Amino acid sequence: MVNGMRVAGGIAKGRRLKGAVSPGTRATTERVRAAIFNILDPVRYQEGRVLDLFAGSGSLGIEALSHGAGWADLVEWDRRQSAVITSNLETTGFAKQGQVHRVDAVQALRTLPGRYALVLLDPPYKMGGLDDLMEKIASQSGLIVDGGVVIAGHSKREDLKERYGPLRLTSHRRYGDNVVDFFVYEQVQDTDNPKQDGPEVIENQKTETQTRSSGDLAGDPSW
Image 1 (cartoon, rainbow, N blue to C red):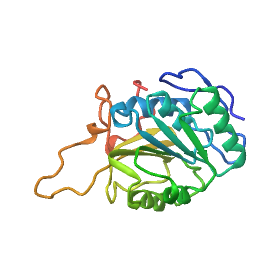
Image 2: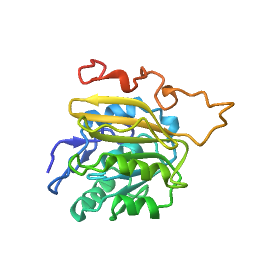
Image 3: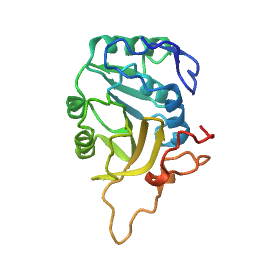
Image 4: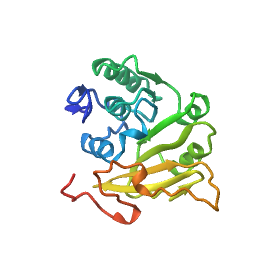
């Protein structure tokens, strides 16, 4: 098990989290979680619904709750890791604001109620098929609210597209071997009057916008 994991920020900051107990489960590091929620404008998900796919320890979904989300659906197929998420929800005080679903990610997209303001996914790097999964997320009607955000963690050896239907890449961050891509969900706009919102629409205003051209930010002293 990964020891020493804690909630990185918000009202549950510092609370201990159980980590990976099953082979192949990779916990999202506290550094990366802190960076994600420092970048993301909390207005985007405050009191909103959050979906955490491949939840593992539930650390991303719990981080969202700690920063003010109203509800989290945490999807994890592995039985042992599902038990870890349940325990972490209890110890952080969010047991009444989250539910663990022991289904695979594709089934979750079809069966969960949707209307998510924030979708988080950091699947195993060896899984493959992330590009196809992003297509499914983008095409699932009613899954994401207009202006909602999808955050995908992946290996630096795997590239995602800049657009998946209504999902548009707005920020690309790299931390060592870890890459985090931010997408915003935009409903089809009138081409004669396009929506004027750049990368800053999902980012905290105190954070400098970084796009796909930003390259390796692992050595950026601001992190």
